[in-house]
Length: 256
Image (tube, rainbow, N blue to C red; front, side):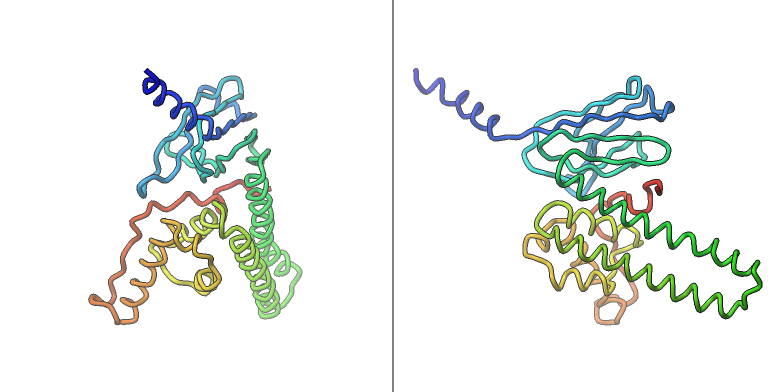
């Protein structure tokens, strides 16, 4: 008779070991009312729905069991809205026309602090074209304008590169490192090696290198590099990654 209680006891123990995520969302965007939102994460190299809910009077809610901390994306239909780290704690999402932010838990707070800094640099880069027009109206010599703006653009680009590098390095051993690596590499048509990527991989921990997306991307990028250098079996041909690229909030999120 005692054996009959073994399975329920094991299941109860497993359930007690699993943590849960709880997401409370609010939106001031009236067009979202009545829409269905989805949380999607990569599974077997594809984005899969892991939860869904409706937006009712500007409020929405996700909750579920969590076997491991993971990076996910909030979607409306097939449109990616923003990244979300599913971790233990009370996660809050706020959506409005000016800004979209996730907070309330350590990894989400860290991620969106990084995204805010990245957006500030993106704004500075975008403002250079306005500055160019203003300088031309002031009658400044075109060569002088170009030299100055090239120098400013290079400085901003270096700051952006260092911001990404330091953030990924600081988060090699949690989901943020691979998650941001996925974001920065999603801008490329196929996996390539850049000085930034090579620098990241030269310093990476074993855990980071073994992340499925990172491992697949880097191996494919190395193969492509050999082909482009004429060392592969089919020079000139490049291989696309088999891993679905993540939506890139570094370019898709509204700027502050």
